[in-house]
Length: 263
Ligand SMILES: CC(C)(COP(=O)(O)OP(=O)(O)OC[C@H]1O[C@@H](n2cnc3c(N)ncnc32)[C@H](O)[C@@H]1OP(=O)(O)O)[C@@H](O)C(=O)NCCC(=O)NCCS
Image (cartoon, rainbow, N blue to C red):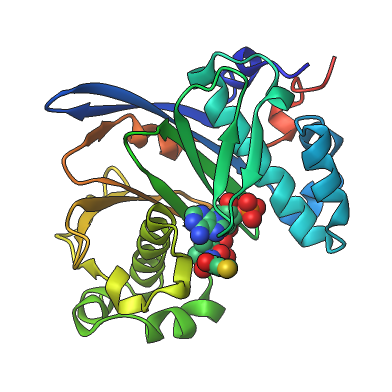
């Protein structure tokens, strides 16, 4: 059995306060930093899967995709476990909806949602109350992808990104993808619809950038510049979020959470 209590002692799990005029909510962010190819045959990650999920994983022939599936499922379950009060990650089902969006299945029927992301060297998930939609996207800043990502920038975004092209373009890209997950459209929508409104300067001390979207003004984004990845969260504009600063300390490796073994 996998114990979320043990998980929470790793530094990959952050509890986030969401403050709104009408009250407080809680979301949980889970991160894992490990190359997807290494994760592909990791028994500790596989032990978190339900039998149905294990069957899905077995169908992925490419180690990289199998690894990303395992890491994404693991992060999603780890983030949901404290909210659901569940002690066994295998009992939290993460199914795929018709657009590929993750759907939470748990016997409690408790109303929580999850959004997840994986990149070449890690994965992350945010679990949130169903009534407070959120999305997440992460990328490791990769100079080889800079040109492709920059092609989608609006003129305003491009001007803003010019000051620090790789980090800012990756930030804009992940903020857009996080919104696309909230909307469930993914990148099937015209990319300019997802554009960000270039924000004020990043708060370099906190390693956090906050901004709005050019068109979907009811949402905003918070981008975290972690040493291993650029991670963006999309959330309702009027929600204040606290706790994300701790991302700087997150170095969760599967190795460092070796306690997470099935008993
Ligand atoms: C959503 C999307 C932008 C993510 O792209 P990405 O950067 O390659 O991948 P990430 O690792 O950041 O995120 C992948 C996760 O996003 C989630 N996701 C996929 N599609 C999603 C959607 N439409 N809405 C919300 N979340 C979605 C999944 O959980 C997926 O991980 P999983 O397949 O392991 O469960 C991309 O997959 C996309 O554009 N999908 C749209 C495809 C679509 O609508 N198809 C319709 C088919 S009819």
